[in-house]
Image (cartoon, rainbow, N blue to C red; front, side):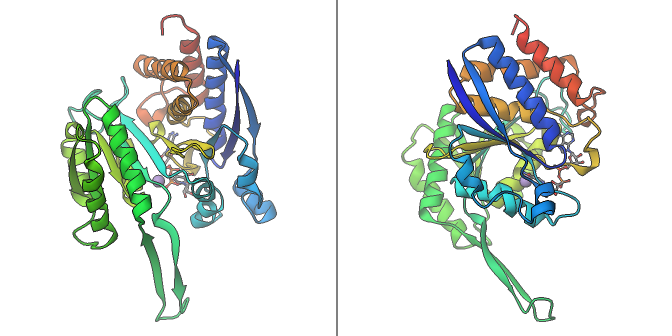
Length: 357
Ligand code: NAD
Ligand code: MN
């Protein structure tokens, strides 16, 4: 029997609420299928640690995480700590430190959940957004000169490398190839941004030749938001830069019903380091402690984690259980239900134990 070492970093806000739910579901799967067990180590890293010690995680944090098979992450962000401090203090050092360059964000409308788009239901919106996760606009390069003075200048430099763009493009084409429609949309802003973005377009054309069976097209990011709303059926797999895909995937989550159902996987495709799995949403201060956080995004990312670990049957069973519970209507208020986090989690665990899924 396989044992997977999981590093759980629930962190801030609703992070601990949804990670507890996710772990409960995975434990239930492990018990039912009997093919694997989990060895979970909890890390108390996050904003409370920052307030106590001045750092969200220890200096050797990524070193400590290296020995794990996967990282299961909640969310960072506290009302009394600047957002750039929390993001750069915990989540980005893990993504960038482990070169998790492919950020994979599946979106579809689950049964029983309604899209804000009129007439759009399950089957009409089924996308995977691939976000470049190691460079681009979030490279961390830039600075502020003459801070606070009237002549102050702030720069935020986007860095695109041929290696970085080629590898994410290849990942996206390969993923598109594995899906039934074999169709990829490459998003840029190569009209206004003449350098890195034009390089994206050129590299997309080069890499496309390695995948003759994949159809692809190009979109400018602004027009892409319109296409996502007006013609969701016309899209399948999407690849975009770190910033663009960050924004597009929040929109995708909302179009699929709620940010509370949107998952993400930060993958090191070469498997040199552990990959990290998390819901897309943040720490949601407005609902923290109320027990009503939607755990579906975390269940879905747990399924991504199981798939990454090679436990495909368990991943499928988890998604079938989630879909059954969504269809039955045991859902949290963000998607129009009246259930709380624990009730949804118990319903999903019951469905996992049930013999009919
Ligand atoms: P958010 O995702 O925390 O919340 C946006 C809205 O969606 C809120 O109304 C919230 O209640 C709702 N929501 C989010 N997740 C939900 C869930 N599971 N169930 C039900 N409703 C849910 O984004 P925000 O309010 O912009 O940011 C709050 C904090 O989170 C900030 O500090 C921000 O920096 C941080 N943040 C962190 C991450 C991350 O850790 N990956 C991502 C986004 C934002
Ligand atoms: Mn985001």
